[in-house]
Length: 343
Ligand code: WQD
Image (cartoon, rainbow, N blue to C red):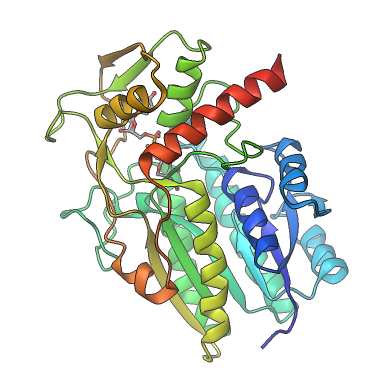
């Protein structure tokens, strides 16, 4: 059992990674961030510093670079656990650039596992995704649901990564895969949040940019699905709730005595919310009359998916703290903040 409090956070300059670094500091850990800044910049590193008043150790580089990764382990370790966020995550972009997604998302995991082995580091928390389920036969979906064919290369990389972990853990790893549903919102301090590159692919940043007047109007992708209001249903979870679940996952592994184990948990609220319901909630919460239109379906979209969170609630002694209204308000406050930053 490692007595170190050092936690390596790959992709720690990104949206979910940065929020998790704040929670790690709050729980007495010493996070070390590794990020190639290909999908992020130093804005969130500054935000972490402003919230925690701590200097965060940061290494800029690529997780697929074995020599670089080995040097980080040697110079900044020993690590008690690794949180592996570093991956490309846009469903739409993965359809356009499948090889980049396979190389980066799978190559970085294999390289990380090899360097962990070289340095006798066994504990890993992996960022997986509800996209591994495809369109589940039943909702809410639990962890025993079978993998359907992934609707995108992004989802396929998460399925392959989970298969790699299933095949590799018995060689001496203790691994938790957290299947994120739809992380949204921003830190209540308004010092951390999502910074999309270009036009947002995801719903909530597109809503907040439309509300800020940066986008002319929101297009709802499809109003003819087999749901109560014809729009897709998702499980929207506050990014800080996602972050605190990672700290609980580290504690969970510390309490397990096995030499090797592999557990998977759905990370969702258990509440299905439609796209139209989310839009109306945003309008109610902010008082902004959001311009939107209902357009064609987006290829690859799942009709309805939301979590059965019973397993994670019980095993990690973790429950969501924030409501959809909190998430939307925090997202809007962050949007206004970064607009000031940019002006
Ligand atoms: C949600 C809904 C769209 C934009 C995300 C992440 C993925 C994974 C799962 C973690 C869909 C609709 C969107 C818009 C719209 N998370 N929409 N107009 O596709 O569920 O995937 O969660 O691994 O990484 O990308 O999220 O926010 O793109 O879409 O109508 O302008 O909103 O059709 O029904 P998605 P999303």
